[in-house]
View 1 (cartoon, rainbow, N blue to C red):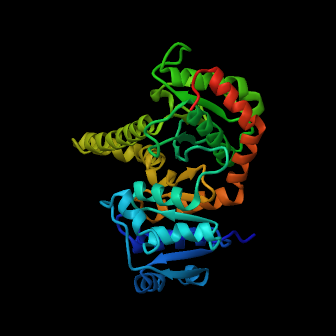
View 2: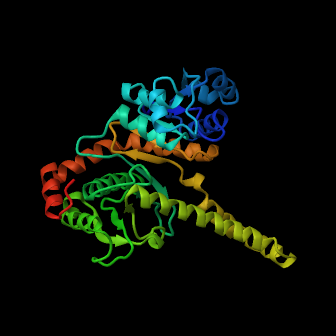
View 3: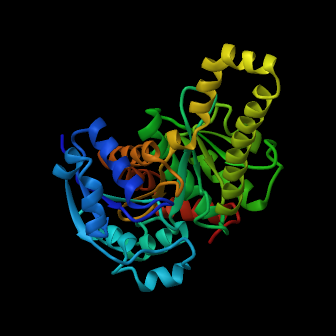
Length: 354
């Protein structure tokens, strides 16, 4: 089965064209059905494609010599949306020339352009940034929002839960994902009124939404493997994500320092190397790369700016799977199951109307 082609912002990320093309080529080698619209500086893309004839045969180039930098403000990016590689990739989704877009560029700019160009889905007030985090369990955990919305109300959190559950069904194959709200404790009395109101709504709608909802989880439980979807506002979610990533780097650096401290430690490293390599693989963000903007009338996926070719390939694979599994249509269907009027009634009854 050939999927709709994926628009790749070839100029995004810390290393730009080289890594983005290598990542797309790796994804293409893994999945022959992938096809691409490569957006960016055509001479640079053509040069990079010389090493990847298989990708060249499955791609079209859309030239753009304008690039959004990491320092550009979202307002500046919006003014150049029609001329930059990022903006043109997103507009290809809007026009139907591509089924989804992938960029490793400026997150704020990507969200601003995506929201303006694609607009939010009916029944969704704000899009959310959702990513996969590794766990001790069999499946990764979907966490959202991770920075798109620093201020959220009860209604937003409920919508995030609906979107996160739809995403989780795609990546975990669970029919009833285990959904929890991120809080400072698991007791019902803990947290803000907004969180408690959202919990009330989700608990009453759990059967209609086909989710397993049991209240709250704490930040130190996110990666335990007993939750499939963690819902929070973008401010708390971004802090939690960076804390998890920082802890992973800390553990890795500490192990390297410990194993190089003495001859005995170096021998110990050789003995335990299979285990440490497994740990390194599990914690490597490239192996969990690809954060999706959910709630838009079109799919946009954000790759880590520092991702290597493996990371970019994984972001492309996430994108393709979301296209293949019709995640946007799933979200629409789930919203319809609880009904806009029902959601508004529950929201007002809980005291958290927008």
